[in-house]
Image (cartoon, rainbow, N blue to C red; front, side):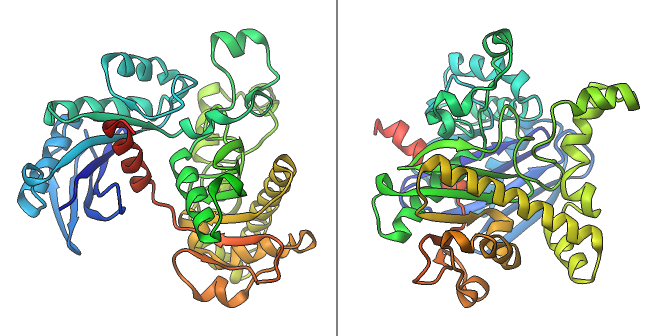
Length: 397
């Protein structure tokens, strides 16, 4: 077995993990522990195509990581016999402190903790996962890879909100962007698929899952992205609305007595596709639309309209467009949505190949040879991207 990186994605009540060859992206094993601190904990470990499930008691993240280590020892591959380069941690928010992955030190942990107010739902779980993994693997280097880091290349004009200076300076209010590891990986693979150096390619990447974001990538560098201070801004998502009028909070506080907490909960968990169509699952929304449901039909039109808004804006920001790239669960699997978006861009020289769009799988071009802009599908692989970046840090590359 080649040297490997153990990639950890720790949330408030779960730990997802994968053992990855950073050179090839091969996954030796993967799994998750869920319902940490709750009843009905579950360990799910998959290796060599076989999945092992068991009910477990998981009071905290330390127990969760110990269960992960035990699953490797029991079902393989035994981490004691693996050349484990490092443990790589997905950390959601790095603020403007981190433009690159970082070897985890006490100073890095303190910085991630200071950033908790910017990601109160994510960074605390990330920190708990890091500390638990340090206990379990005290002699293995630990590296943090930040969702926001890829977007630190945005120019100030793209990252700056026109809000009072005190907000920007004292409270770090600015556009940070998320899904950075996905956008980094996909933009690089898109250039390879086109057979061109990454430095020459201008692309718009549409990461479309339950969370969704668009990014303008110029020569491998993020120059604009749809998510902002938080993951609420931008595209319509499963339970998030994307862009709304900032005056909405005050309006609903005055008219409906909505508190800040209620408003935030509604935007995070009760909006998006769920609010428009009654389901946060795009597959179900498509089924409802096909059955004639008018709410589902409107939901899809809103989604497509917002996507077009960002594709057009980012083509203008880039000054040209070499590739429009679809990725993540919806982007990779929803041929109808891809067709609806590209059909509306025909006037800009995009032309879809219907057979390639509906019949292919994996990385592929789904536009015709005559299309002035390549339309691509590139399955994302955030774990490989994290492992690759981690390996560079520990090797000094």
